[in-house]
Image (cartoon, rainbow, N blue to C red; front, side, top):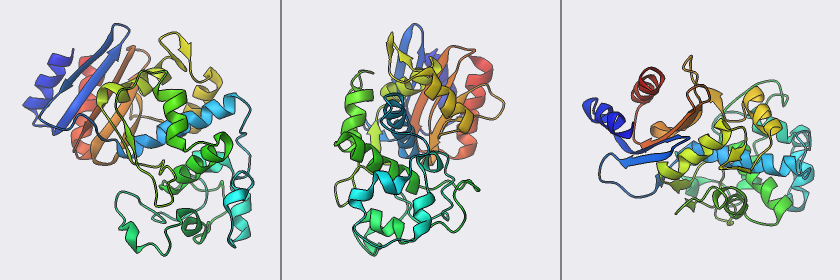
Length: 283
């Protein structure tokens, strides 16, 4: 399967670094060109944060309607608009916090131009402009806050908790995680890994929360993620569900085909659609 896919990538001049396909038979992986062993997954990072929140939800350590300011009260040493007290974990997971696009954009901003190196204070100085829960606006803010939620609950940086509870049980190899100037996990972006490992997250959701016989997240959480679209979305009419990242990163699965796929590269949306179409029709 991977050989045919590689032929398609090269024939169509797609700028893919590496790609992995996972089935019940295991993982097939190939590097499509000379590149680093680990590469930026950009916003696919968000789905790892979502999954860690799911673990805490399953354990009863967080509820979807918990207020973020309650969970982070120990870190809020500054004045903020009271509207923040109406923002919940669910609002963050669904990108319905009511904030404007562009409050922070980790991959595009010159963060040295932020007014402070305290990202939490900077975010809270830009309060929601609409009532939380009313409007979906995709931004990087929610998953930075969710990373702080994970830290507040577990006592560990979010990437450390994710490594312990997700990456190690899924037998990940090398990864790296970006942190802010105050050493908190960025969460909305900033993870680096290979497609061979990234595909395992899609396979986990493919199998309703179980990886190689070990339950990592509950079926209830998987159902919530798909129903309320916590950074996992149906991909057109392809039968695939997935999470993409800037410049064309992707991890996705198709339960009917018993197939998960992940790729890393530098692609336009149009070129990524070519790969999605290929896996929808040829596999």
